Length: 65
Image (cartoon, rainbow, N blue to C red):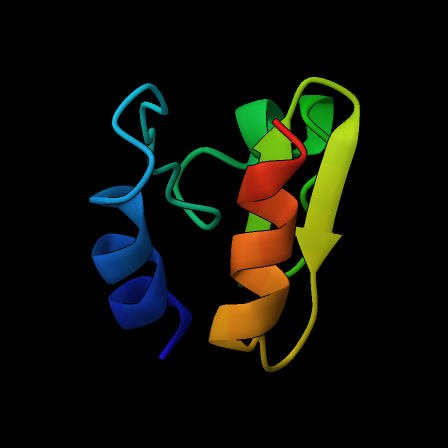
């Protein structure tokens, strides 16, 4: 669900580049970025994570970048 919302919102934020990291196969890289759950969005020190991310919460996160 978060992936679909993020994909549609990224059209509105053309300056933002998305990098997907597979948590299970790249666990070291995920831990270095402080990612312990799916889904999690990370930009620098900012993180948004939760069991269910709404389109509104994702939009608000992107607007802070």
